[in-house]
Length: 491
Image 1 (cartoon, one colour):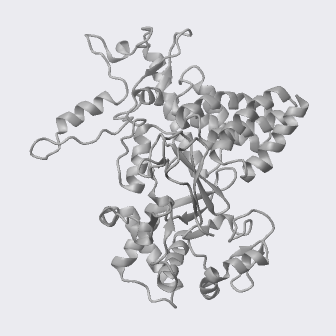
Image 2 (cartoon, helix red, strand yellow):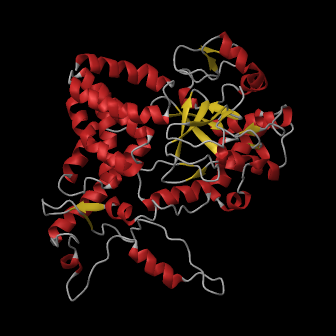
Image 3 (cartoon, helix red, strand yellow):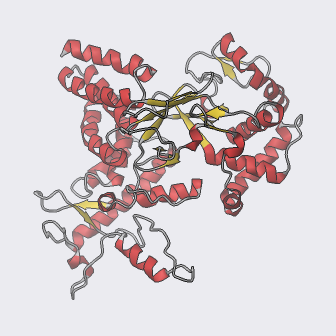
């Protein structure tokens, strides 16, 4: 299927589809093997390939469609069985096969009538990659697997292979299912033209393995040099977002949102002790806790001015303490109403942040949230962390998903009410994750037969999802519309 793209001469409205593209290469995540089709990625009843007994298809149509791409790996899977090929090695093997056996080097993926991208146009960040020990270790391990798996292909030399690896890891998209969970990885040549911003004007969504790029802001015309999507999860401090982008994509994000002091002051904030004041109060809770990375400034001779950097680091770290003859704890106060903080309250805040930080890390590593742990964290955070504190928001997010899993609907609704303002603050009001949150909340309310509340949430979901996914996407047509119609009838 050829790419579909928007005419660049016309104005762009929020919700307009500007690019639809099939992957240059893709793999289904190994954790999804046996539950999804390896070709269309749909979830359901699937059958094993009779040859390799590794990949699965939902029917003959998908098996036939995938055979040109699968036949070379089918024999290799069979030969190395029962070993399981890592996802990264399988993706790199597919890229090598397409480049050296197929049309990979000449393939053009168009994003306008005259503009296209080819494999050679993708950046490999070769020098950055060589200096990245973690990725070099990964590359070395993949090479060992590939030499065993691809015995029937003459592999490129190490320098060329590292270039292929660099292009793969830098330009890969996570393929997301209908619930915005990662189910695979794909290389999309035309879509790779999109740069990152923490305040994007476009969004990438998926229908199976097909990527759809939609505008989420009105624009006078389509200028691909100005189009931005988010490469990462945005519900983090600016410092954490910048660190993730530096580690994975080798650039320091300096978008307006990362440099916005309003974002910075809420990230690790305490709640004001004055119940009539809703302003955030910043209290240092660990040493050298930076909330944003500032770009290096050079002196006239080209050297880094460390004095300038140290000053700026202080300005954008946790709120500076005033030391006019008083102790540090006496100096901490709300800048809006002047309420001061006692040493006892500061100690409670620090211990709450440390406790939450540890448990959030544990839940991330476990890939699952525990209701009792989340509840205990939230109980400790009550009246201590600001409602928009990023750790409080992350805990609410984990708790909401965990409560849905165990079907504790009343508590899930309580947390959803608190989570919506957090999502708006960190993701913006036109993010598919916010639309999905409204949809989940509305679905619970329909089940609870609170029709008017459900209708309000589902209308919010419709406004966002119609813009980010379009009115023909399965999320809109198969999940949202039936619930919306039910809520309208009952209300």
